[in-house]
Amino acid sequence: EPSVEEARFDALIAADSRVEPRDWMPDAYRRTLIRQISQHAHSEIIGMQPEGNWITRAPSLKRKAILMAKVQDEAGHGLYLYSAAQTLGITRDEMTDQLIAGTAKYSSIFNYPTPTWADMGAIGWLVDGAAICNQVPLCRASYGPYGRAMVRICKEESFHQRQGFEILLTLMQGTPAQREMAQDAVNRWYWPSLMMFGPPDDQSPNSAQSTAWKIKRFSNDELRQRFIGMLVPQAAALRIELPDPNLRWNEDAQRYDTSEIDWTEFFEVLAGRGPMNAERLRARREAHEDGAWVRDAAAEYARKQSLRAVA
Ligand code: FAQ
Image 1 (cartoon, rainbow, N blue to C red):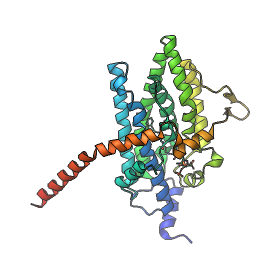
Image 2 (image 1 turned 90 degrees about the vertical axis):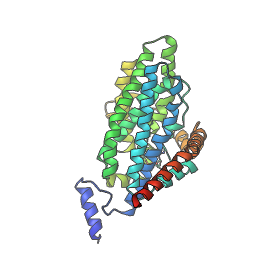
Image 3 (image 1 turned 60 degrees about the horizontal axis):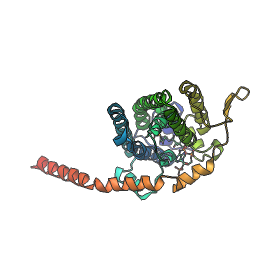
Image 4 (image 1 turned 120 degrees about the vertical axis):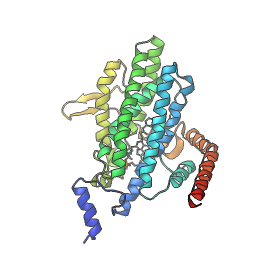
């Protein structure tokens, strides 16, 4: 026999209504949301690094201004998401400590290097493209603060994806060396971008419960398929090749056939052994330490303001 609160929670979920911070919720629902939202926030913050790497070397003033705006948007996304997670009872400090200590997960995709300018195009097109496919359904996630944060984030991701596409388009209309650079970047980012959707459905321990709670609306493999379907015509427009010789539409199965994803690589990256994991954490720790004086100054300012309020 469920308690009155539990029955009310179940009814909210069944009615496709929103759960709000002050509503009663099962502990496991709260924990799952803290896990997913904090991982998502960390991804945005760590995700500033691969592109931040090119701000000083963008090929024109206009490209530099666009890239700076994009990287700032990512910081903003991280902040909305940390705020959404805080409504569930975890503090920003706790989340930061977990990230700095290396115990928190963040998206596998940000553990790959960005050796060329074309990587800025491939990240926008593929990484932001995958982020949109995954996050549009999250706008309807059952937890109110998360779903609402997603609405604005998705609008900004759409702009990010267009700017990536446009970088690649410009390169593909350039010299043979520029076309080669664009193709090489897509070759390197394509498979990791497919891994962003998470493990295959039969190896996804959280999916069943998160779907029942209407946090997830589609499975990892369904969203991966939807993403491939979005890429195929765009790749044709770019005249760029997706690096999978077995990629073709299967009319009978009504899905794309693909080569096998290298899940060993995915799990290696999750275990901290991707090409850039150590460097990403090192840079994050250093930035946190370098920012200590800002936090101290802000705390001191708040202390003085509160004294003034009393006086
Ligand atoms: N990387 O049972 P499931 C962006 C973990 S977009 C690392 O299927 P779930 C925008 C998973 O956490 C990127 N870990 O898990 C941007 C779980 O581990 P746990 C961020 C992964 O949660 C663009 C375990 O594997 N987006 O930042 C990954 O039901 C450009 C088992 O997996 C989001 O976070 C992975 N790829 O489904 C920024 C979206 N995949 O926690 C800058 C929100 C799975 O049990 C530049 N998150 N794992 O220890 C989600 O939609 C879900 O959490 C999934 C995973 C779909 C990622």
